[in-house]
Length: 354
Image 1: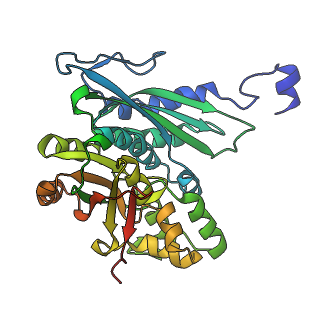
Image 2 (image 1 turned 180 degrees about the horizontal axis):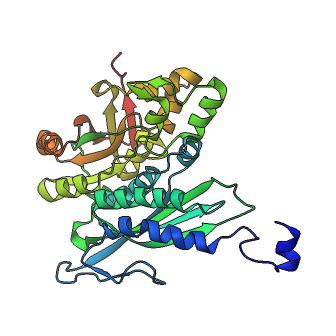
């Protein structure tokens, strides 16, 4: 800021670090992507003070609204470091819509919040295009959001993202622990990578190892592996619940497989997962070997290759695996639920294949 900006020209919002014109350009750049997510229930378009969505009461008899809020964590720091901001939006959407489907709710709408150090229209448009991609993959509409410029609090090029998703489920079709029984099968659904969890540890491992993000790794680069977008399971889960006797789902995020699976297991039951049924991919081996990370820490921090779990009637377990395969999703029977009065609700047993 120069003396002329403060004295001769008077103080201004732009001189303070907020560029309204850049914000308007960002809106123009993202309009086309946002429009591709529209659903028939949407009223109006981008630019209003509030997004409007008409709930179809002819379709829903006793609708229950479900809502979820989350962020993409410090995975954003890797995206910023590499200057690749077009996939973090899909990660963000995955975190919220896949929490909704755990109870059987269909994602209806997403609203985002993007905080930036300096508003760079192209960067913001890339982020929003990724959010729009995630909305299309989940069937939700992007019903608006907010981009806030925070000069002095964040440096140029820095940003953070958050989102809220809203969905709906029939009152008598809500999935949850009350539907889970002893003998139910635990069907694991493969992750696309680390998804959005454990990146503070990842960044620590990068710091202590000096690993090159542009270096070759598993057929691509280490940066590619770390930024692999989070798989969105919402439509697969909803289709499975409509076709087969699904009890509920568990979205594997912070806390790992056992930690999240245990959240949907009722008292008196234990979901036991057999590590021998799958082998975590190269990115997990890199993390463990780079930092000498213990198995306990790995399983508490990362998804270890399982991004979502379906609990299902054991008689339908093989049909469910085949159902997911037809939709291009690798899944397998990884364990079962049994009676147990111990303190744990879920645990992993055995060893992964060498």
